[in-house]
Length: 254
Image (cartoon, rainbow, N blue to C red):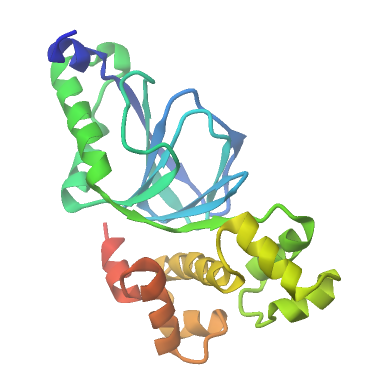
């Protein structure tokens, strides 16, 4: 098969969506790999294993046949791109959150001009191929929060998601769920791949991303998460995301 033949097989459908805050789509799955690009707002993609947070100017790859739920943490504007199985081959075999470059943002605007797959011609296939080739070059942001499956750990995780400023350690949690801190420590690492402290920091980043996108100031976010100072919060955020909160805000500017 020639390169031209391959290009003629590269087809996709593109949908533009507006989702109001706290609305979403209940668990579903697609037979195609899909890419959701968040133009504005903050979107949560929830799977059985955990939750991804996707802020503005970021996108998420969702491999085929993965059941997931969408929840808008704020008002969200997004573009959904669906590819045929044969056409869409990337380096991703798992869900991944990607930071869009300026060129990629422009590319997403061009994708919105695509006609239906049946009406796409060679020039459209060239555009889709550029998108497909460029996608793996984007910076991946680790905003995934793994969910523990053990019922005792799940209780702890749920409490912390509702009250992230809680300072309880695993000894205190052990008394609450009637199991030793040693068992909780071992099971937390086994089920999430993270220590309790690392998991809490990942949760804090998810909460912070939402509030930064809403325009809340750093001091109030630090207080909400139980940090004694803004500098301690900024240090944690930089350790987790590789950039400061101010740099992150620049990255989500449309």
